[in-house]
Length: 183
Image 1: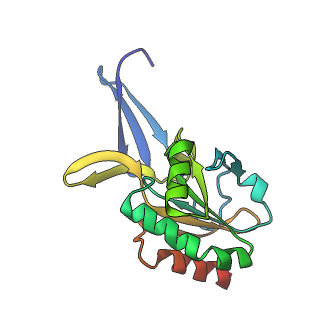
Image 2: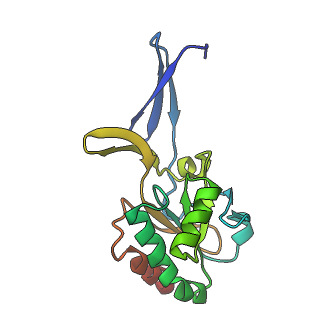
Image 3: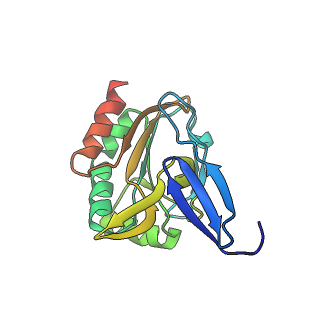
């Protein structure tokens, strides 16, 4: 690829890059599916630690992706997962919320709303891309790139047991807990 400007466009599960000269480059993304091995990750967390899927082997993981810290829907979702955290922990699960916010912003978000779940920062976008939750969104007629609210339930062997996409916040944390405790 020369030093020309490239624009990205997404069509179904493909990313296309088109230069000003009309050259194209295609990159197919693979989204995780039920029963497949979850993509590994290693991310910094609020509070200064790190979390990785490899480090959680042997435990189920609830991995939920949310668009932006300290917004109404994301705050409610974090509070709902926090309220159900004791039951999730009783089932042996680790609950991790992922956004592309900085660790500093996650620290403020966690403190302000007294969230007990692990909040991880995917500033590079590598994890949101690997899980297929980064894509085109629209709001009030404006099209932009962002995180699709989604949750993955990963079993103790690292296999994806359940996927919720385009999540509606109300009742979602309870539905995830119900699925976690029924497996």
